[in-house]
Image (tube, rainbow, N blue to C red; front, side, top):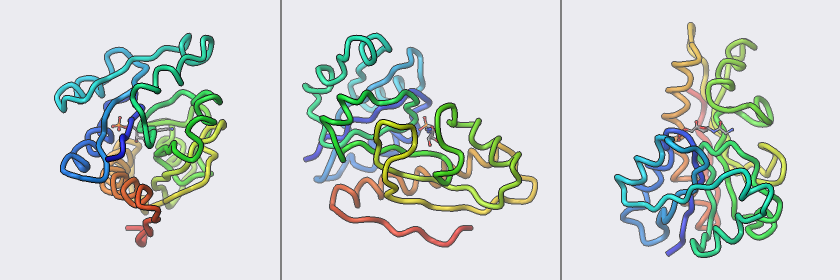
Length: 197
Ligand code: GAR
């Protein structure tokens, strides 16, 4: 059984979808959540699912380099960033090379990088008059949103699309594909995208 450790600091809807998807699986389980934001919705969701939450702060990550020590007892086979907005320190990227993945709510390499998260992304996509957006799931390296792409799924923007409606449609795509992409990745496979709707 593989341990999935989910890093999240938002509402935690993707963490919950992953936890529920793998709840009856013999392949993997969401064994812990790492969170940097006191009061984040993900903490309550994890509590309801009986998943332990480890809180981390900037001092531990970037000054004292404590993240490897914090992660060691959690024994992660795969680290999954699901709405975690801080850069993963280089020592952790090295320790877990090829075993850290992130989900991003746009079609990378467009609309990625520092500050590009959540509604900021959807507002930028709509302001630019794009016809498509989508989701990207990729390996994590020491730069924001630049690791090797594992999967992308596009959607076509509707007439009159707003950042809010786009956010909802993107979340739907994420909730469907993220667990399936993780499952395929754990099995050494890749999932194929479907035509944009
Ligand atoms: C997701 O939409 C994810 O793609 C995004 O944060 C949201 C978290 O939602 N991540 C980024 O923007 C990373 N740059 P959730 O807390 O409901 O899972």
